Length: 159
Image 1 (cartoon, rainbow, N blue to C red):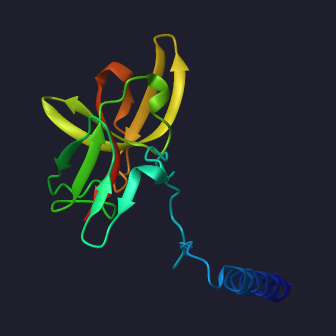
Image 2: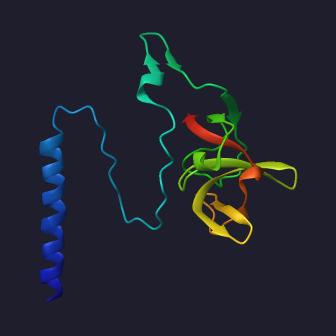
């Protein structure tokens, strides 16, 4: 009985991989693949940069992102494998609460230090809108933060 389920799973898995390969031949779209087992799910950040704002030339890339600044990161490991020391971030100051979604990477101050973590939950309580943030490589969240505590929204990372 168990063998039947395993065979059904394997046939479905390899059929899906084959179909993706057939339909994507000649396409410019990259398909992320999973190696090993997924332990935790991480939501992807919002798309904040329009394709028309990315200009690729022979000798440079131009990103048209108004009011953006460059950030660098300490080697804490909390956001590994996405980024760590040596990566450069592109960030903006969010204007509205609606600028922040689950999956986005935000910077906020805690004990005088600028913390950069991912939004894992967005909700409402008696005080209004809150965000729960957590480092991708951390087992515990940082708890609730409010929009007025968020200083930056990361819109890109360059390694």
